[in-house]
Length: 148
Image (cartoon, rainbow, N blue to C red; front, side, top):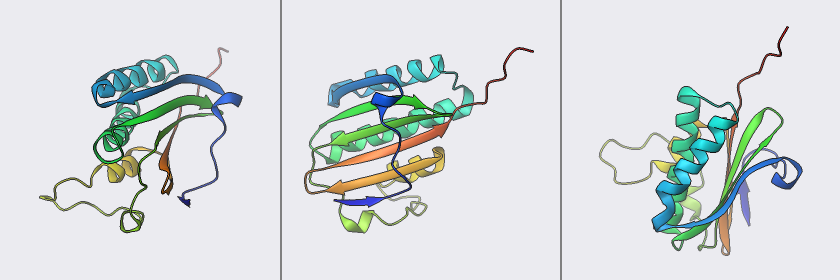
């Protein structure tokens, strides 16, 4: 299995798991709303919240369109970050798509999902091979100040 990205994220079992569910074509909007609600409850707000939810939406849409139509999304908190993995059992991402994404051409059809994830997240990891792909997304949570 080919892997790109930084060090492995903490396990959701060892952290504050917020969501663990399977999804298919008919659940894309539901998953997007669940992720939004869980992260709002965790204190992520504004553009950072909306950007991260958009990144998750792009990745789960890719699963539905290009990797067999079904996948699993896991969302959790660890340390000062929210983490999300999206896993499928598709054929893997072709090597030509694994290089760091460049800005898509204006009239190019497709090719924006992973590029957007890289723009909107603090970290994006990819592990892919012939038995499936896992995309990892991370975003830092706002620092909370304790009452004086």
